[in-house]
Image (tube, rainbow, N blue to C red; front, top):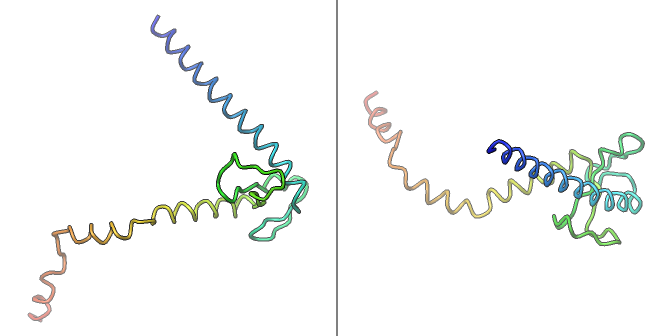
Length: 127
């Protein structure tokens, strides 16, 4: 019997994940189609033009990073190629990683007790 519960639980989880993915694809489809109708098929960063099969490489970037903010005029969107879109989000991740960490880095470096070059001056005097 316990294996039946595990199977039912994993089936339920799989159904929830599948439903969430389906919902996300449907939502993306609607704003992507609108953005492709509103804007020229050109990457807003690198200027590369897209048509035909290559159009799948053009993505919709949400300027405020809120995927639920999809105004009908497209004011929160810009079309970016997959490379520029990845770069945009990677740039923000790096900025978030460094945000406020410089102060903590300075304080944490003073906590180190090991000083690898402490005796260097003495060694140089001997030569």
